[in-house]
Image 1: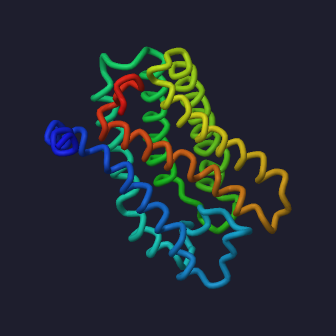
Image 2 (image 1 turned 90 degrees about the vertical axis):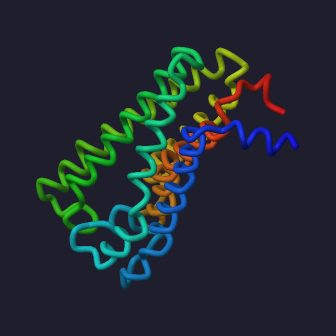
Image 3 (image 1 turned 180 degrees about the vertical axis):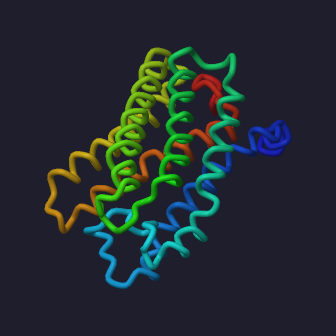
Length: 220
């Protein structure tokens, strides 16, 4: 009976939160299945972005499988931003807003400047992809997650948000450190920790929206 009541109380904006989960599924499907159209692709060694490079044989399959990823991510996060207005505390709201800005920059930046070739061929769009868009996305991701952690750990009611941000941040650092520390033959494994961190945190925020961002003391 309680389950039926909770479901009935959800509004459209709460259901929009599930788009974050759909975005994660779409992205994961692209990462897992796009190599089927890329002969010789070594997922343990190569970056995920190689699959969507301009001349990658897997580009079309990537676009098909990841078609829901960018759209669902941005719609979900914008719904989260609308829902939390006047709720949570200032650091939490600021962190989530900043994370949303990062997602917009990521979606637009990588679409405008995809890799021209697997790796870095040195073209203008490769330079923008590797040295402008990626550092900006990484810095905003780290900053936003740290701010969410500050707000969440400050108020125990929202500690679960801080824990979610901490897990995502740990994955980002594991990916960044691992990519530099492991042999090149295993670069792809370490890099995947980083790329799934932001996608996973978006899904997490989407589920929080679906549940109405309940404070911890109100959770059953």
